[in-house]
Amino acid sequence: MDTRLTRLDLKNFLPAVLDLVLPRVCVVCGRPLLPQEEHLCLECLSDLPETRYATLGHNPMADRFNAKIRVDEYEPYAYAAALYHYRADAGYKKISQALKYHRDFGTGRWAARRLGARLAASPLFADVDLVVPVPLHWTRRRARGYNQAAVIAREVAEALEARFSAHLLRRNRRTRSQTRLSGGDKDRNVSGAFSMRKAAGNPAAGHILLIDDVFTTGATLAACHRALRTAYGPQVRISVATLGVVGE
Image (cartoon, rainbow, N blue to C red; front, top):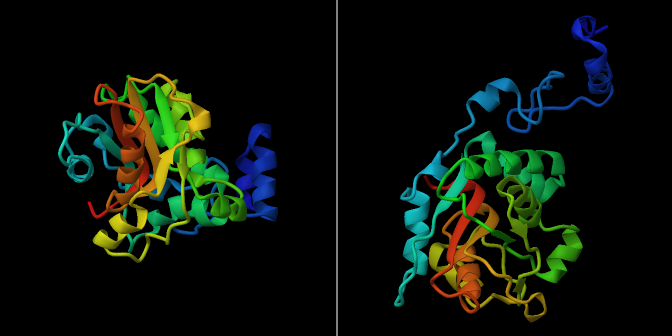
């Protein structure tokens, strides 16, 4: 018998037995998890490369995003935050990939709750009253069965005690995957790809938070921002948050 079982109380006994039958592993490193660990082992959790951007009005992610949305007209500064640095050569990218590609809702919601907690503790995001996910095209949504951004957004909205609107935006056409496109190609790929859903109306808001899984160049979120601006004037701040951020 696994010696860990001899040190467990009744509360932890059943999960430990299940771990022997269907072992849970760390999303990042693949090591078997102990009964008290969730999704990440304690070592990987302690090394999670958090950005700490939620409390910084100006940070590299926010500066990059504002450079994309500030063109000709006045635009209030958009706050931007991510839970962790998404590094292509590190296992932490698997956190968002687990949700997006492997239907690991447990890990996705766990990470989203951590993101939500960071945002809720920040005065920059304290007045967010509407949370909106980046939408999928209906064909991709039907094939995948869910929108990973909506899974994240729902948890963030709960943490912020804000309204959640899954259908405020629509994706007008099925765009190519952004993964292997250059920065300019990403902008062109999503240009005009999003619009407001007329049937959803325009719920009152003072600070809207756009949610996606990963921030790379910000092209997709900027395109969603432009769509929201067709219905909301500059008196409404529109900010963004993601699980991971690339290139920081």
